[in-house]
Image 1 (cartoon, chains in turn purple, blue):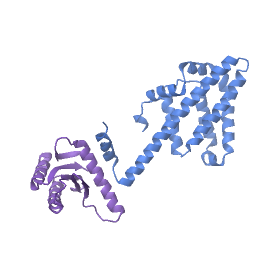
Image 2 (cartoon, helix red, strand yellow):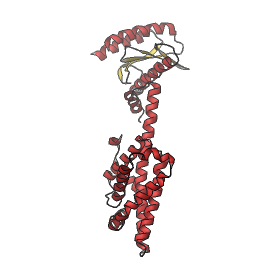
Image 3 (cartoon, one colour):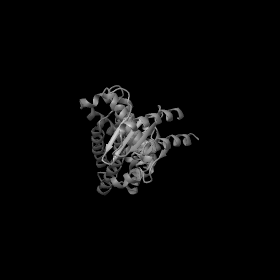
Image 4 (tube, chains in turn cyan, yellow):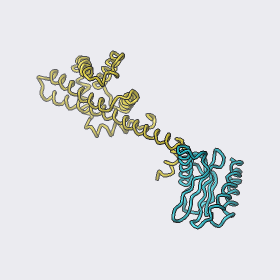
Length: 120
Length: 188
């Protein structure tokens, strides 16, 4: 049930922008809770790696006096990975195209993270 | 950490690695009545040497008699067997205790050599009239000391890795569960 609701949020997020290629909700322990991923991506790896990156981002922001972490953004030549907390128990991870307009995506992701936080 | 280890496998592999055979085990058990009365002197000689090392003092102060007793019990166990999974687990635990009190690993390695040397002297004396027996017993003693020290070293290595992982988790802020899930995701 909760998984369905989370999947709905992800579907809405993926539909909000053609630049968003995939998204997933992960527990802070790295387990997949819901996902809209393309085939070929290993859910376990996406989950664990996303949570690990966010954990490292938390610690980096803290160590470098950047305040409370809002998001972790990774840019590769094929696109972006954006991770953000969705409440204290979950992580929202989004894959976006390299030409994506980040400002709009940040807004959509923020809204989705707020919705997810209410569900987990 | 100890409950995740297959001690039967550890004992089997360490026996192969150290050349400690069933024949050696039989020889040691047969030699027990001849050797055991001398073991108290081996323990005394060992701690006498340790006393000359200032670095060893913090590990001896206030607990010398208890250490000597444990040491003698261990020496006696080298001549009773069986050198099976339970023995391996016991040796691994001794290694863990050494790690916990932060005994430098070189102390344990050095101690193995010192004790071996003392036991060889005992074997030479006890079997001075039987050169073949003397040589066989010395080989068996060499095997069982190597077997014991190698297993103890295994726990040093495991503890050292666990310590490194704890540091890594503390630095990155990752929980152990997250680390385990990450490791599982990349297991194959």
